[in-house]
Length: 225
Image 1 (cartoon, rainbow, N blue to C red):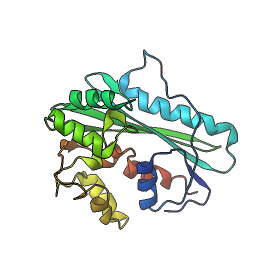
Image 2 (image 1 turned 135 degrees about the vertical axis):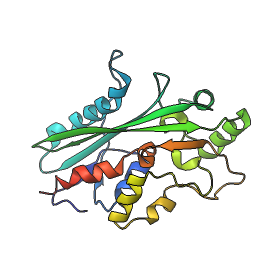
Image 3 (image 1 turned 90 degrees about the vertical axis):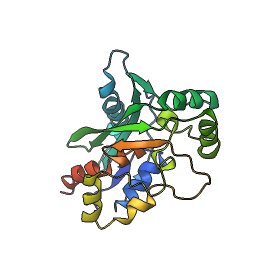
């Protein structure tokens, strides 16, 4: 889908850029210069949308005819938000806490133009396998997940042959003629032996990657005019 006005993806995330590009969007990339902080009293389920809106607000004075997309992803485990790890030790601690547990991934998205603004989010539950310390250390060594909330990437820890996409996402990919994106979106046999980090995904897989592209596509349809 091509909009009849310039589209800007305000994100340096290669995964968000990849999903937007593979869904057929043409866009330029800009990064908002904002601090990703939020009030301590803000409920956890509102944080992702709150930060996405802050990022969008940064661009508001600069908007002419453009449509801006901002996003933020948070990992929530037992009412605690896991941010991007600052170093190897923090990454080990995060993955240790996620091991054998189910957590929530929320991505907030804000679409803004001079005329209007839409903010929405997506929630996915992810269950981890029980990981040994050696598994965790090997995973960090291989994938260096320091730019990822929760210290992991969904595409890097799936069992071989496991289709992580929800039925809604599969139907969406069929509708836009991109069923091949299922296989392209997660790693196969780049490394041996494989480290199966994720046991189960309930909900949107692409949301865990960093952008609920099905919802984004649906919302952007109304911005074509």
